[in-house]
Image (cartoon, rainbow, N blue to C red):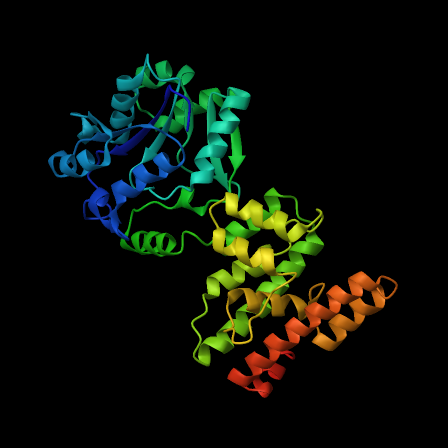
Length: 373
């Protein structure tokens, strides 16, 4: 949990004019947009959360009462978002050490992102900590109380961004594997995209996977292998789904991209699993943990882990190869190490068993066509 003095401010006072409907109360899965925004901060460890209300506030009160948050009323909400920022900062000035400032229509921030930002703030004492995804700043910034006086005395020309720019020399950015920091709701299409992101929030997107690989300084060689494995795994999964299975394509692709995340480290499959589980991606972690050694029951049904396991064994470097070629290379390389040879043979048997099971579902010809794509 974040230490006392850290407040989460959520701005939900505007007209939602571009969207054409009241955004805070739009459904998002089994909750509302405003509830999802509160959950994002709370799951990240922020205990003191306050929501700034204005337009249609009376409709928000009963919802907010159930969320156990503080309410800050902005009677000047018609003047625009900056008036809500000033109202919120004014309400916490003198008691808060720093605050997250989250627009209510940017509700899906990953728990790990909030924690990483707080950790960097405590380490650096920065005036502002900006969340960044793929080089682009998003929400919510973590703003130190050192900025409060300038915000409260500002006229709003240029908005909050203009005021915070005065503190750039004493601010920091943190690169996050979190596409949610850029996802707001201005249009119906934005809302649809946010809904899709919510449904699959426990699986990193393709871009988030690439960000994770970059964050953990994975070599270009390993990253290229991961992209190749992900592509083969996707094609395998699509073939199998066409034969009646119900494999999660996004999970398969994420597992393929990240399976060698910790390749340069000892026991890299377990280490990689721990990394992604700490980010909230437990299903991807399970795939990473099993991509080296996968135990199959006699009556097993091919799942996402089996697809990634097989795809990994069909790719040498970033090139598609047959199982025969892939394991011949490994057996030649480790011929002088009986214990390693035993492991290689065990993996070959597992890969061949998955191949045979897949062939029984889609036909040997379809799998062989895969090898020449």
